[in-house]
Image (cartoon, rainbow, N blue to C red; front, top):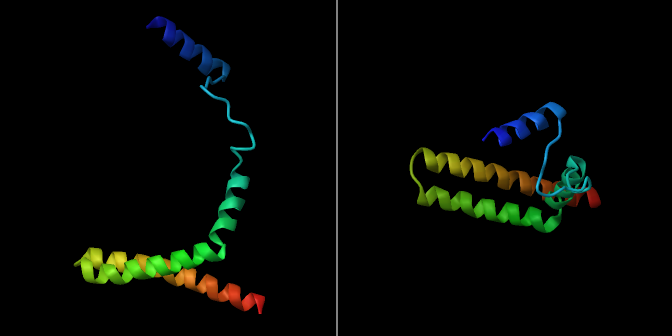
Length: 96
């Protein structure tokens, strides 16, 4: 037990961390992840999927659930559907 404690103490003092695999810097960049996610979310097929899927779930939740769950689920899914529909509508108007 003292050997692992000494090793942990030695690493914490030196600031070195051991990992099983080294992650290349290109894969851990938050900027790269943000730009790829932004381009994915603004693509037309993804916007259509978000709009239609959330609209259907919002309407289905109105019939399938009851009480607070019904209102919360319908409102949340409806908000996402409206946002995706607005993004589709605004994107279409920008190109015209």
